[in-house]
Image (tube, rainbow, N blue to C red; front, side, top):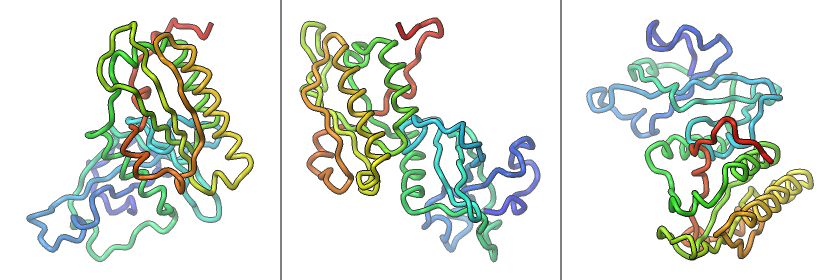
Length: 250
């Protein structure tokens, strides 16, 4: 939505002139005839970033606090970042008889990812604490590094032999599914990057005491079935687990 529609005082003064406003309210709420029923729209601030600041762990909604995505800006592709904390609301009257900002275009996949990411602030999957605790901080760091380098396309789903808090002498058996869009499978470089993530996850998780990786495969969204979805949980809990600053990768 055009920045000039928003009254002074609604947005912070330091967001920058190149930032874009994205309406995150549900479509039905936006067109609700009654302003009494739905008086406001919610807005997110998308800040442009140089390409070298791309961080793979912020793509596809894996991080619950930050989201990065590509959007078409004029004739070029531009990297944007949104923080879940940069959320504002304003009167829905601002949208009356107005046109959206045509200088930026989001494709259907980006819109769906943004909506799912925003909802994840209130509903996101959780793994057993006993499972998370079996992954040392140095392994968490290496997993984040692998995703930061090669994880733009991937969603990670895991199945466990138990979702209970198991005692230390009972291993978690893990089935890993790294899921990517079909077009990533059909692109050699993107498939290689996703395969590197699979290999890294299998190798790193296998180093964790009390975790046994039974299977780790790359699948396209086309082949990932509803049954697969029922039998796994998306693995994105690592985005908010803390790592002590003095921990090394050694």
